Length: 140
Image (tube, rainbow, N blue to C red; front, top):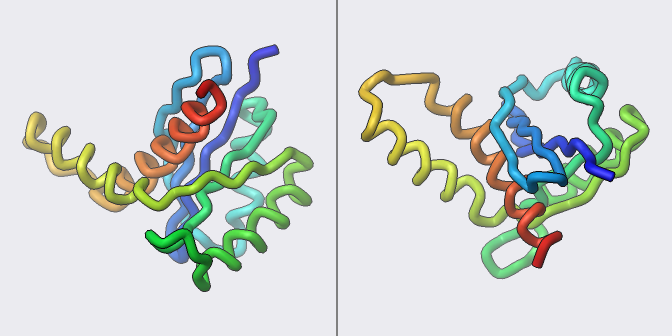
């Protein structure tokens, strides 16, 4: 049974969102929301609107695979997401997602001279990369 999956790139100021389908195993950037007191409600709205079955949350580790302060914050956020949305939450290694998003953005920008909201695009793109990486791990 195909599932709709929400990818999340957690940040202190902004949270990037992406959506994908297990049937096609592809992820697409969705949007960026602020990290504030209304964040969980906004994510709940996305879960309802997109009929999300599963949430994949980027899990930040150091390049050596060690946990850091934000790793514990993400674990706490994952627990809140599970409670708020009543959906399973999978954690996915995100070590290279920001770098990959920046590289992808630079390539797109070189092809398009229009300057967009750089950080917002990066955060949503990073969420898509996290989700795509998760899809790729599921099929290999």
